[in-house]
Image (cartoon, rainbow, N blue to C red; front, side, top):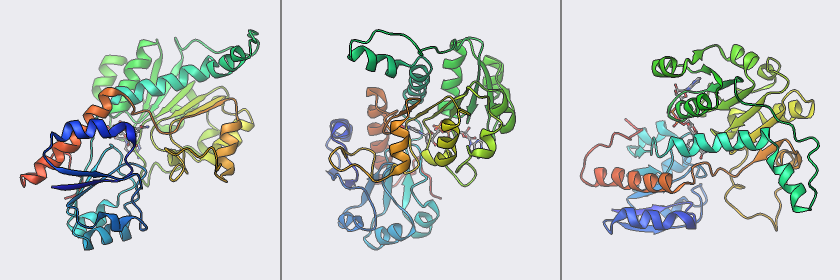
Length: 330
Ligand code: NAD
């Protein structure tokens, strides 16, 4: 099979080359998939995408025209791929449903601890030989209530970690995970109750029509004043404008984010010489109680290895005319 990897980052190449075991002809390009770059797919059987690629309806139609038969995602989330259009076009799409939920949950925990204990501010002071510890007070996580929105693979690990810190866990999900109730005493509640009771809220739902802007000013008004929100799922699950307003009004204490609503075209690039004209982004970066990272919660050795191996597992299945259980299309 001839495979074109869109949006290739230097760090992932060695993992992909190793996992390929010289079986397929693979090419890497840095550009993301869009209507402007779709013609680069000509001559390939398969393209591989990340969350920064845009496989919407028109792009899928072009891919179909160019004879692309398969799309293999190097990620779990697939909100950027029009699955319905791919199904209609007969293009099979598969993802990597679980590469390391630990990588993401541990990263969410890092964001929480860093914000709560004000480590960035402390470190900035130390770098200037300022050893003053005023205004660095956090709170014990022990006995606090953590609200987990989405108790799938990542949310379940986050639950386990927060249980280890001695927290009480509230959860909101359309599916109840009985194992989490039995093992960690998790209480499933409405989203309103979760917001009212939680000292920390961690988001682990996929982005879809029901979760887009789930966290908006209507929900924020139910939240405790000192709540810390952590979002490692997808940027648009939060209404960033509403959350910035709440941070400004001290309705939210702090926000940790690995994902940003308008991250496409910005994240993964060095824009230091050409700063984006994105006022919301500038505002977030300027706020001492916001910790923004550029979508790298998945960056662990284990996750990169699993992503590469599952990608080639999916490709190998298709090349043998077999189905893969990771297929998202009918
Ligand atoms: P998962 O499918 O295992 O779990 C998602 C959970 O959300 C499920 O339990 C599901 O029932 C629940 N859910 C779905 N729609 C819902 C709704 N409308 N209301 C309430 N609950 C709903 O997924 P996962 O592996 O835990 O990953 C969660 C998300 O994390 C992914 O969709 C992806 O967007 C994001 N993610 C981010 C990174 C990163 O690097 N930052 C990496 C991997 C995944």
